[in-house]
Image 1 (cartoon, rainbow, N blue to C red):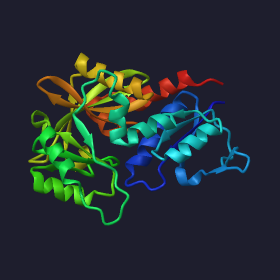
Image 2: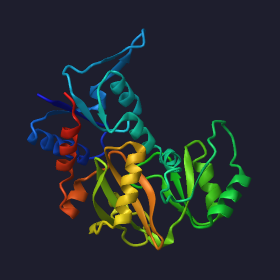
Image 3: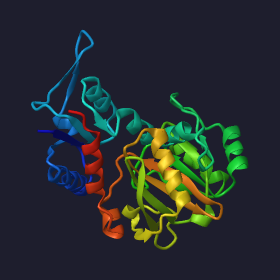
Image 4: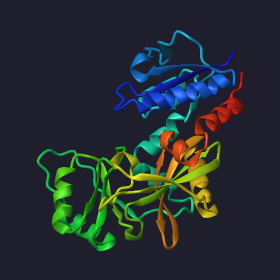
Length: 295
């Protein structure tokens, strides 16, 4: 019998993490694949003195659906011979938003103009005002400030002037972050495209309420089924392929010139997407995994 391991984060901030794993477990088991759900803290990997890797897993699994961002465990699971969907490398590329942009820079995709802030390790340092002025000159105001790591719209703010920019830089000096051109035409709106096995399944438009410029559902945005235009599908599929993702959610900003890639999520939630679009993402992902498994 084919056995699958589904790993989620050990510190979930809500039941939807578990519901997503259980939905995928049910879809796999409908295809005759037995699946177990474990938190990353319930699995540990030991790097041995001779360089080998031993795992605490009591069962033998044919593959692992990795619904986490723990790059250390991911790489060690792969090192021990377990195939991951998505791969540890793909997860790492998506977890750091600026690294995502760097990985996609030569792919011919429409990207939001972005400038990484200098990494700072020196206590008592002060922001580089010349750098901040260059950011202002290049991107204009308002501009978007983003922490490189974060989900659900956390660590994203709109900066309206040089004073706010300097304040943000002081607050985030020791946190990896970057600055991005603000797309006024896409304020509070984007399109989430789910890609499975290289194929865009469909799109969901997310529309913020009131003056909120972020379109995350967790911040109160409304999800609506969107017609998946060919250019949106192409950008999403090309981004997934370039990052080596079997499953992902690609967030695209809607502009007068067409879609602009905002973020790529290696373990995007699909519960709301399924409800709005009627597309069975868990079933599609399970079918893809079934085809990929080599016994």
